[in-house]
Amino acid sequence: MTATTPTLNPFLTNNFTPVKDEITADNLKVIGELPPDISGMFVRNGPNPQFKPMGEYHWFDGDGMLHGVRIKDGKASYCNRYVRTNKFQVENQEGKAVWPGLLEPFQQDNPYGTDTNTANTALVYHAGHFYALWEGGGGAPYHIKLPELDTIGKQTFNSKLESPFTAHPKVDAVTGEMMFFGYSMSQPPFLQYGVVSATGELLRTIPIDLPVGVMMHDFAITKNYSIFFDLPMTFRAERIEKGQFPLMFESETPSRFGIIPRHGDSGEVRWFETPACFVWHTLNAYEEGDEVVLVACRMNSTNVFVTNDSDRLPDGDIPYLHRWRFN
Image 1 (cartoon, rainbow, N blue to C red):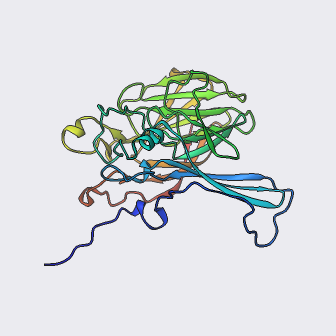
Image 2 (image 1 turned 45 degrees about the vertical axis):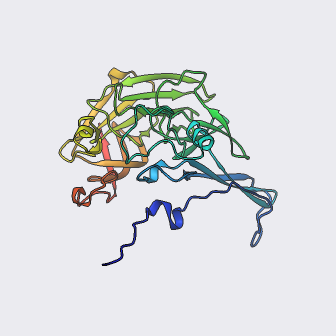
Image 3 (image 1 turned 60 degrees about the vertical axis):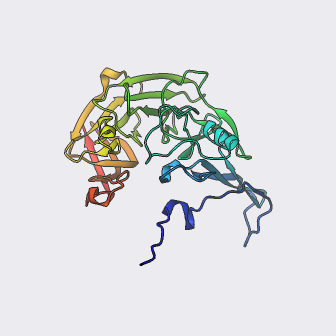
C-alpha cells in the first residue's frame, strides 16, 4: 500500500491563501521619509473566497476584496474590505458558499438566484466615483466609498444600465468619457457597447451582432474608435449535454476584430479576420494615418478552462507582444 497526498488547489494555498480578517491600520511604520506633498491612495482588487468553495475552485471565483494603502501628510495607513455584493451578503447570511464556481455545472434553478457578481476583477475611477468591477452576466459595477473602501451599492446609471459591464472599461483622459462593453455567452445580443459621459451619464448602449457567444475580456479605444475582439473562446450549450465544459477554444475558427466609431451605430462596425488567437489584455491602441493600430498580448490558444491534461493545447497561454494594423 502506498500513501497518496491530496492535491491542494494552488489558488487557495501559499501566496493565494484567502485573507479572513478585515482590518484598519493607521500610522504604519515608515522606513525613511514620505514627502508631505504626496497625497493619494493605492487600491488593488482580487478574488478572496469568504467560505470553502462548493466543488472545484477556479481563481476567478473568489469574492472581491479590496486592499488600500493611503499616503497623506507624510503618514501611511492600510485597510482591506470585502466588496459587499449580493453574493457576498447572501452567503454571509447562510454561513457557507451557496453557488458553485466556473468549473462546476451551472445551476439555473439555484434557489438563491443567478446573481453571482463577485466584483473581484478590477477597479476604475470615473466622474468622481470609484468602482469594483466584474464582467459576468448581471455584472453591474459596485460603487465604493473612498478612503474607507466601504461598499455603497450597485451602479446602474439611473437604471439605464441593462447590459453586463466589462471589468476593463476605458476612460479617455482628454474627453473624460468612459467606454465599456458587456457580453452574454448564452443569449443574444452577445455583445453590447456603451459610452458614459464625463459627468457620469450613460449616454447610450447599442447591440452588436456576433455569430455565437464568446468570452471577451478586454477591448481598446483610440481617439475616434473602439475595438472589439470576437475570438474563438466560444460558449456552446451542446457541450454541456456531452459532459464537456461549455467554454472551449476553437483553434480552427478565425478571430475577428471589430472597429466602430466611438459614437457609431451597430451597422458601422467593420470586421477584420485573422488566424485564431486569444487576447486577455491590451497595451495600447492609436490612429496612424489611415490605420488603426492595436498592441496587445497575443496567444495562439488558451487552456484557461481545460481541466484534463490530455485536452491541453501545447501552444496555449504563451503570450507574445503583437501589433495589428487595420485600415
